[in-house]
Amino acid sequence: MEKVLISSKEYNYITNYKHDEKLRNDLHILTRKIWSFDFEKWYNSGYWGDNCLLYSLSDGHKIVSHITVSVIDFIVLGKKKKFVQLGTVTTDEEYRKQGLNKFLLEKVLHEWKDKSDMIYLFANDSVLNYYPLFGFVPANEYIATRKIDSSKNTYRVRKLDVNNQFDHELLYKKATNAIPLFNISMVDNAGQIMLYCNYFDKFSFKEKLYYIESLDTIIVAEYIGSDLILYDILSAQEVEIEAIINAMCTEQTQNVVMYFMPIDNKDYEIKLSKEEDTTLFVMGNEKKSFEEEKLIFPILSHT
Image (tube, rainbow, N blue to C red; front, top):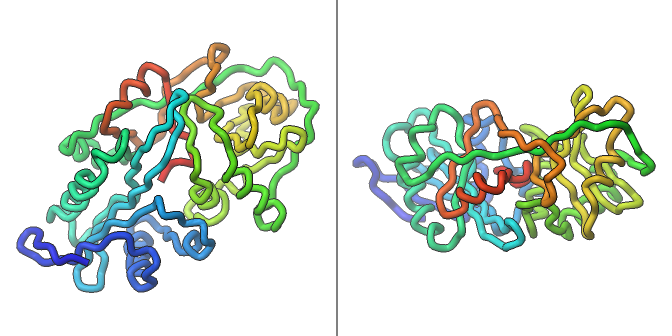
């Protein structure tokens, strides 16, 4: 804990305190107030890894401004990259416009800019003019889609129940050993996958998990009308995406939409991904790759 002076007022600058129950609960008070969620279930599960770091300012015992830093390894176009994602960037409403989050953001950038290949975040529309002040630039993401002519399902697919111990352990095993299958794939971050598949109350993919036994592969997907939406593929060995599509299609499926970019995407229509009230901001040399190679961050890597 470090005393700092910001706008003529003294605050406590605190970092990496997730194992301090009092401070962690103080953070939960802020995140519940602003975002209506907390990470206590994730912490108690034991899946909160050392790559998810906390940077906060407190006024006395009250945490009033915060940034979560996730240090994530990706395989991008066949090369390993260390990216830093900023999440839960927030300041208590009573303490805004005092430079608190600016202080934290500058601290984070100073610490990680030279130790990572890219720093990025997803921002809502109310702060689109804020992040460019620090050197961030907006970047597009892309999805791959195509029509399905007919269903050829010869695979046995079952829905996972993460409340079942066997399925829970199966999910963690596949998340731990998953190999990169896309043009950009998160690696060695099973803890974050477990967060979004079981321990995050704001939203969850726990009802969107399927297991293809003959391929020994878990699929994160859902069906919306005649569309099969694929979010992620967790497999410890190479698996053909065409086989995944065939396995997951039903008689009602007319289109497949993939929120990842296949390595071989020549047979797909590549479209701009447009998520309401969300813009990707990046800092570093990888923006060019997103534009030229039409990339998208896997949904389960978001923070």
